[in-house]
Image (tube, rainbow, N blue to C red):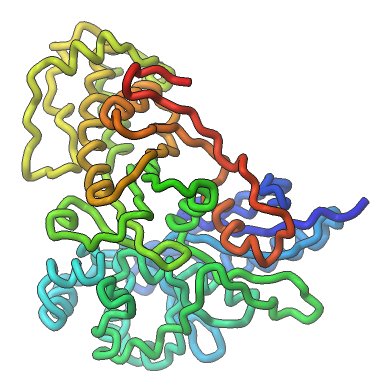
Length: 461
């Protein structure tokens, strides 16, 4: 029996490190999940164990080669963003992999923005809200001023996906999906690195930029498989939609965060959009994606607990609560509550509601979802503005929520609203990015399963 041609994808999250093998139809034929114990940096802050991660890549490849039923054609990587590995001229890491949640020194942040313009203007230029260590460029700035001797020894600062690719290819490169996501590195108006990198002599420490769909050769003698240069995970998750649909769309990716992504909106960010947690980042073909974010998943969990406790119910019951149009219509006709302006969009008005005013928990739950969809509508409209979009796709947790989906369809009656589902979108997108380099078949048309919700009759098909 002929071995199956496969691509290996390392999908590295903060908690779970996953390895997938996909066949040429993008079906998973092998998978493995690992968790590593965190280590600590010199300040005692928790951080990724880089040695464990590096060793797991080589161990995984050895395991794949033991499976004679597979013919490895390519390897690619996707990881969380805002994480730099500083390597010397021999490719050896010089520091721990600092956690992007590590507090940023306020004095150093003040020094940076005093030198390179006020926060609002700089944020507009780089499409990067002020996020401290989550702006990975500011991590480099910090290294220069806090550890100047280490900084001098840095050959390149590699984002984590590109470091993992380097382990196999032996080549150090940079990728736009990592550079262009709230890093404070990229000037979106000039479509190049921001001038502060030259002023601080940091630009030479950025490895050569390669297209995100480019491939390299494996470093090991006798190897014939190709090596992708790696992608930022948010960009990777968008790729299955970009290759499956030509008609302009918005993807609402839901989980702890609810992120509206519009890869067809090329308009520059406005100060108002930045104030409401909008940003731009670069997708794998290099063009900007306008995005807006809500902390909806977290709020949903907190308020569902409140409802369940008040009505003495089990939280699990709300996972399968069906949409009741009569309840929704009655609640929607009541006077609206005014949200706290200082909270912006990040909290719905539901936490201000008195649960004693509801007849039962199902009614309270519908009100929660009405309030969340009201938030979502405002947030998604930020990325819809100025762009003719026909469809909204929702993936993640809320795509399985009947009440959310029906209400969203009612909120956007002029658009087609779909619940979308696919297994391991980030890993599939990472494989699709280098389809041309390893897969002789045409792209499959059944990657994503869709369920349509009508905003007119509020019926599902």
